[in-house]
Length: 312
Image (cartoon, rainbow, N blue to C red):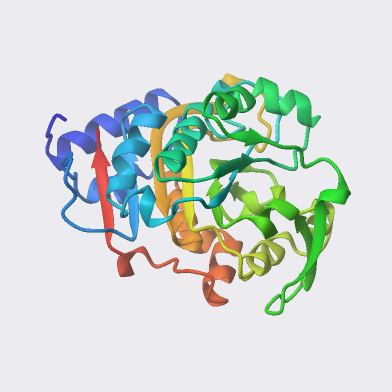
């Protein structure tokens, strides 16, 4: 890794962002300091933010600094991975989680001794085309995982949300109920209704009735669901291709910039807070992040966390 000083990095990043037509807040997040590449992490962090590599290589490095995948996946466990596979578009349009990242995370799970790794999403476009054209179906199968549908209400079972304010119950996919380990893999992008869709909003792909959330205070419903007890043990935010406008599906490649970044944390609220700052928003500017923090679902105050920032 090339070690550059903070001022030089900020200047380079700003120039690249302006060239791409993006007003990013990278200096306010990555610009705090540059962490040197380390094959032997010095300690375990609450959140890792990494930039500058391919999706699989960034994960290989980032996971080491959060305790390694064996900190989350044990031998013979049944793992569920939930990427965003909601849209019938190619990876370069940034609407879905990057297939290279999905494949590598599955491989890490098996290396940790997982018995099975399942992947699904309750898609918005026709599910077969989403699975195929996103590249995720092939990535899952190539890694030895099992990709399953989420298109029938028969797969979903009712749960109670005792802490919910607007969302008191919901129906969630049976794989979430049956899995030993749940890993959340959203893509960072703009959203017409919620401003951003990241880790907490990615949970709309594990429930059956998405329209209820949209009709009944979307932000509060997102926060309410974050209070559910079966939380992701790990949130891996894909920010390689980032849709800066016209989300969540996008219109063309003009909506997307190659940010080549990734954020991982066990804390879903912290992951969303860091991703929001990376995109250009303060966490308090996204209502569901503030609501989830107030409900005790996680921490939005990044200053209270041990954060490792890495530039590859």
